[in-house]
Image (spheres, rainbow, N blue to C red):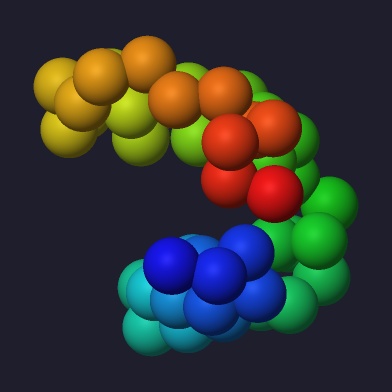
Length: 51
């Protein structure tokens, strides 16, 4: 998955949950991704591998 596609899907999922664009832009994205990783129980992935 291309980085832009990942970001688009992330934003769309959060918008569907009621977040605003400002809230998404303001949040700590790295911390959010760490929490999401814990929730999914996925293997460790580094941002350098995504971007």
